[in-house]
Structures are given as C-alpha cells and as structure tokens.
Length: 294
Image 1 (cartoon, rainbow, N blue to C red):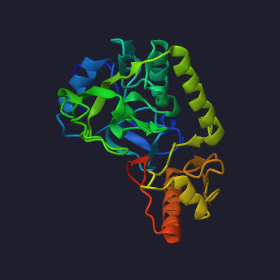
Image 2: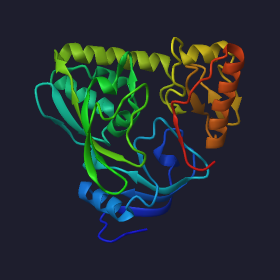
Image 3: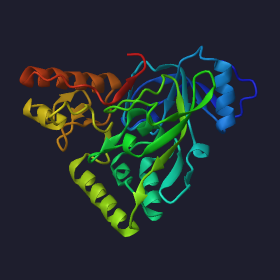
C-alpha cells in the first residue's frame, strides 16, 4: 500500500461496523481518512486504479458484509463537510456533510426546494451517488454538478446530465469518490421552508423506526407499488432471522435488534424478497447497498 507523502490516517484491517447504522459487518483491508483534498488526490494517484476503492459516508443505507471489504475504504472527515451559500438560490456542500444540514442551511438562506433532504439520513456523497430522494423529490431535481476524484486520482467535475440519473442510480464510476456537490433551489420564505421541514421530520419520526439500528429503506418501490405494502401483504411484518427483524413500524425497514450479523440481516432481506415474490409475483430490488465479502 503506497504511503509516500500521505498526511491522513491509513489503517490496516480496520473495523467498519462502528461507521454503519446497522452496527454490523467485517473490517476493511485498509481504511484511509485523508487530511484534505490534495491528500486524497495524491493517495489515489499512487493507487493508480490498481486497488479497489470504496467511499463510505454516514453508513445509513449500507450493509457491510461479515467478510469485510477488499481494497481501500475511504472515509472523509471535517475537511469535506463545509457548506457555502454561493448565490441567491445556490450552495456548495462537501460530500461528508449530512444532507439534513444542507437543507437547514438552505432554509436559513431562503433557498427552497431542498426541504426533502430533511427526510434522508445520508450524506451529500451518498445521495449524489444513489440519487437519494423522498416525498416526491430526488437529488437529480436539485443537483447542478459534483466534484469527483476518480480511482486513479484524476479530479473531474460531472454535471447532472453526465450522471445519467434514474431511480436510486447514477452513472458515477465504481471507485469514484465524490468530494463536493453544488445544488440549486428557488427563492422561498425561510419560515415557510422550515415549517415544511418540520412536517417532514415529524412524519418521518411517526412512521419510521428512528433510533433503531437500521439501514433506511431496504427495497426500491416497484413501478405502481409501495414496497412496504407488498411486504406487509406477504405477511413479513415482524419477521425475524437471528438478530435481524423486519420493523413492526415500517415494513420496508430491517433492524438489528442487538447482535445481528450482516449475514442475518441480508439473509432476512432475501427471505422477504422470496415471500413477496411468492405472494404477488413482484421481485423486489435492493435499495440498500451491500458490499464486501460474504
């Protein structure tokens, strides 16, 4: 592993469970926490695309498998969590910034259109890659472009169009690390925006297992259907597999009841998929990102 002129922290066989909401999973072969953008760029240049790279955000929509993650996991810190208002309706945010903070900063500046970010427990980098969304809005509706470090260290800016967004998907290359993104909303009244954000937060608290060890929405909504309803109708509410359970509160959430392994969590998800298919003939697709060795 190259370490020449590296200023950040490079750790071998690094535990990852503490970084993900499920609090389960194995170790990274290597974990790199860069000091700043130049440090990240230099490190990736030395890798030269020869070693697998995976960026890890707040870990809210991810299963780290028990066998760990090969190659290098990159975890961005404070240097990548700044938010700057750049215009009347625009702002730039570092990729480590929780999108809930982006929505709050936008509201304070009178920028409307980003309130839905309040309902997403993810980071700027995560929603940019996955086209995160809720309440009828998606990242592609507000993202202008993003700055990215490619696996060989090349710095590029990709536009919304170049990302080729679709439902919970982008064309961002494997191993690419988003470092910042620019968003654009429209003029609004701060008090009105904050009221909408409060409504979203309250609805989320009432309908989702907030505070549990979970991974957010587990499956994508099939066209014309809601995953939670299909799961409920298939009799999966409360279904268990070891220490993993389908949430009683919201059927499209899996939870770690205390000591579940990632194998049990992912296995429960597959059990749910099988039961839903047997009941309705609809094949659910994973929304949660599952990474690493089984």
